Amino acid sequence: MTGKIPKLFINELLLKTNIIDLIKSKIPLKKKGNNYQAKCPFHKEKTPSFIVNYEKQFYHCFGCNSHGNAIDFLMNYNGLKFIECIEELSILNNINIPYKKSNEKIFKKYKKRKRLYKIMKNISYIYHKNFNRNSSKKIINYIKKRGIKKKIINLFLIGYSNLITLKKILYTQEKIFNKKDLLDSGVININYSGLKYDRFNNRIIFPIRDRHGRINGFGGRLLKTNKNFPKYINSPETKIFHKKKQIYGLYEIYKKKNNFNYLIVVEGYFDVILLTQFKIKNSISILGTSLTTDHLKILFNITKTIIFCYDGDKAGKNASWNALIKSLPYLYEDRNIKFILLPKNEDPDSIIKKEGTENFKKRIKKALYMSEYLFKKLIKKNKIFSIEKKKNFIHNALSLINTIPSKTYKFFLYKKLGEKIGITDEYHLNNILKINKKKKLKIKKEKKYNSIKVLISLIIQNPHLYKLVLKNKKIFKIKKKGILLFLNIIKKCKKNKKINTGILLEQYRKKKEFLILKKLAKWNNMINKKKVKQTFLELFNHLQIEMLKKKMEKLILKEKEKGLKKKEKIKLWLIKKKIMKKQKKI
Image 1 (cartoon, helix red, strand yellow):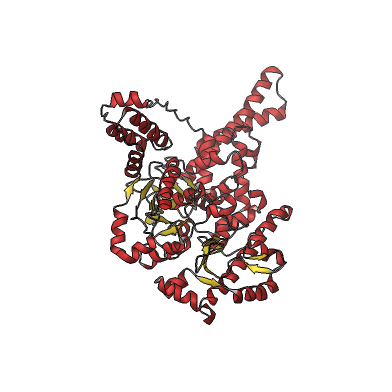
Image 2: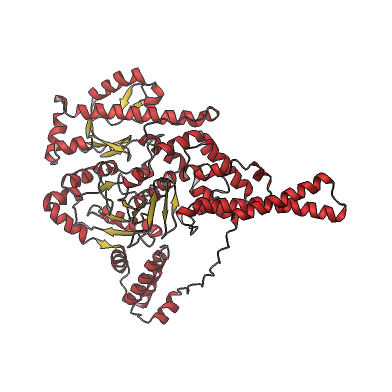
């Protein structure tokens, strides 16, 4: 992907991005010496081992070994692809991506997405303005009955669509955008008679925004139920709207700068809106009950705990169970899922109005852990009175437990399963459940780093050291493993005098050396900061001595076999003199 965007632009983007500000917007950082410190967002820990360095524009966790520059952080934290990270950073820095002309298709797609975002923003403004018109009295009364305040209406940009909005959309937007763009937005459609119509006509409008506030699509709800039309509809799949990835309410959480200790997943738009109004933070919706793997990846990149709170009807109960099954393969050591099971015929919207904020907070505290809900549901399905029922119960439980990647989760769930079937003896339990014993892992001894690796690690961590090498052009003639990479790094440093560790690593992202360089970028050389320059020069001198010794050996061998000419004898003498001189410096 890097080939589709000029490398110089990526360098400029990283120079303009302060990794401290970027990471601080996601997790709390505390200054400690020359670095910033925090508890790692990528694994569970009691004491902070996550370090961010301003000078290097680089982060590293000593606990889980996660490390990299601003792009790597976004990829790991938000689960974004490389191209999405570049777009995110370009939005944060308010600059456009100058795609290469040779990649016209990519550039056109990028421009298309920008136009669609602009269209959605304009249409959303029209919908929202229409909400307060005299022609929208029905909708205003309906919203008042639902108990939604004006402040919340404005926060979520709730709107309304009718024939007036269609005329206004067509009148204003056809002047700016072409017909195809309007149709591709998924809002305007053409019927069999060739007439244009608004897909969301006569519906309450809920703009669906990404974390930057860009509108990807809309949700629409009918005021009155009609057998011929669905109660709720969403935008169709477009270049910017993908239902399986959309999360409603996420932007509002980011806007309020809430912490992400947990996220509450509910079914509907009104559930999110009312919970937010009642100061229940971190409520989001996945546009219904169809939880996807994409949703889980996004959610677990934001928080370590997801609380599912679906409606108390049969569909809601089924959705909770399906959410558990889909979530199990994503339960690593530091992740949790919980469940708030509401009374029959209640939903988050209705229950918060009846019980109020404090009582709902009690429900959050009492939410069932995954293990509690799992066994509660399995026992209800398989009443374990007979041997046959116990057999089915074990089979069903194991088929779910074995999908969990966390060994800790598995261990305690196996023990819990044993208790449920009346077997507490670990030996018998292991035999019945056929739990494999842990294989002894062979610990590979780390290979000792040679001088060239130390040199590369020093130049990666301290790019300004390149100035010490430029005067020694003869180093380019050394034939040694790793020297070409070292010299290549020197060249890149020379081209960009403002270079730092983060930018330097980015030059190698799509190359085979990238993983090696990432490791060396955070490798602890055990060298005092004050002695870094001296050590670098000493190692560099060693390389030069090695080069001179090889030349000397060739001349000595020639002297033994054929003898040397006068010029060659002088050359041999000068080489010996240079070696002695450089050895004195070490």
